[in-house]
Image (cartoon, rainbow, N blue to C red; front, side, top):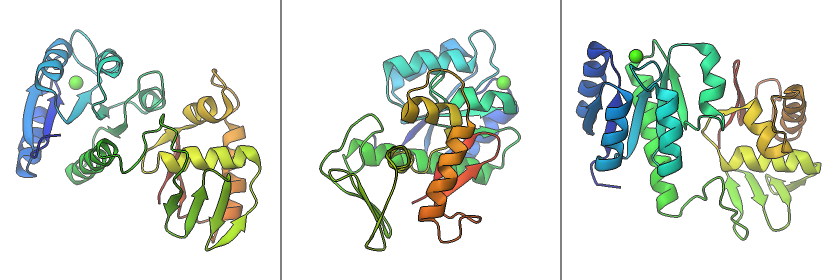
Length: 238
Ligand code: CA
């Protein structure tokens, strides 16, 4: 990653593109812009941005196709701009592979916070401070405040006390914790934790989440770690 992070904005609406560029530049980023999918691919390949803001509705090749294509080629964090709620599940799921999304209309402050969070996460991963989701880190405990996941022992400690988890609860917790800060759709959780390759019964996820909350949250009805993201899934904060 360069010292000044480079952000590629892919947005065909001129006024929004301009507003985004203005705000990102003011926040200290180097900004590149593209107004269609092919230009986005060209710039992503030649300029190697540190992050891509990608609108879905684009002329020619849409943002979903752009995202899928880039995912096969590079690890750059992709933040999707989406106008339709029904797209979100696919966008952050495996099918498209974006890292995060914001729904239009969005507040600039929220968008900048997401950009910072994704860049921070990418930097930590590249420095080896945090394993990528697909990297199995076998000998390091995951320490999240007073919650410790001992991966070798498959043991979870909360405030130093051992917490008894069923195997699927443990796997779910590990998946959430390894991907903390990221919105995980129910389908993605089903696929990764249960190996289900279909949009199956997402209630399974909800039930296990409830059990985990009962064991790990001080007040399970007001969770502080395992947060519900309405209409999508869950996000682990730790
Ligand atoms: Ca658009």
